[in-house]
Amino acid sequence: MYKIKINKMQFFGHIGVLPEEKVLGQKLEVDLIVETNFNFSGKDQLDETLSYVAFYEELEKLVAQSRVDLIETLAYQMIDRIKALDNRIGAVEVHLRKLAVPIDGIFDHVEIEMRG
Figure 1 (cartoon, one colour):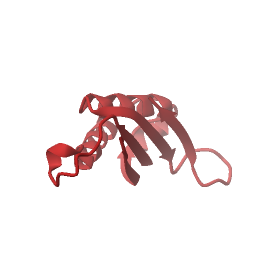
Figure 2 (cartoon, rainbow, N blue to C red; figure 1 turned 90 degrees about the horizontal axis):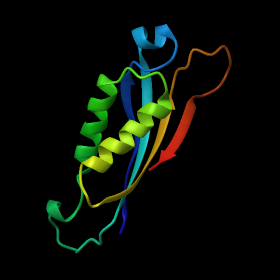
Figure 3 (cartoon, helix red, strand yellow; figure 1 turned 180 degrees about the vertical axis):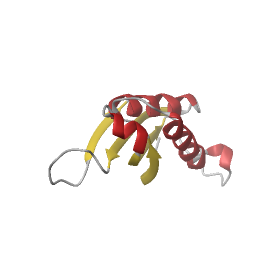
């Protein structure tokens, strides 16, 4: 068993409760942690592991298509999509950040973490 991590992936999406978020869109940043439920055999072959390229491409498609209100909903969908890719995937953890939030205040970003 081991983990595959992809950090600070950036996507552009149209999610949020406010109408301007759906129209203008915003940058989203994602950290993905995928736990395998098998042991690596030591063979230097792609079929002996999981493809982080497939993980990235799946999240990229999901964010491009999504128009949900809540980042929690998007994180939940990300976990479902990644787990559906391969039955050798155990737990999936997502850290999803909205980098520009229409709130009158000074802060870096809004983030949720979800594991499933």
